[in-house]
Length: 72
Image 1 (cartoon, rainbow, N blue to C red):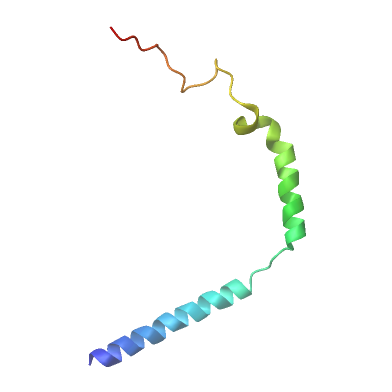
Image 2 (cartoon, rainbow, N blue to C red; image 1 turned 90 degrees about the horizontal axis):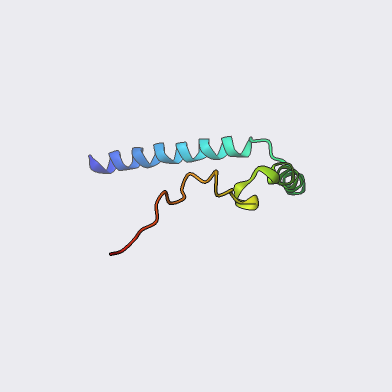
C-alpha cells in the first residue's frame, strides 16, 4: 500500500515540475544587452537621489545620536 502512495506522489510531483518548466519556457525574455542598457540608464537617472551614492545630510539623518554618552 505504501509503495503505491509514494509512486503516485512522485508522479504528481513530476507533473508539477513539468508544468513549472513549461511556464518558464513560455516566458518572453529580453536580450542581456538590452537589459544591461536599461539598468545603466535607470542607475544614471536615479543616481542623484540615491543616499548610498550621495550621502545623507547630518541634519536629515534620523539615525544620528541625539545625545552624547558621558561616562562618569
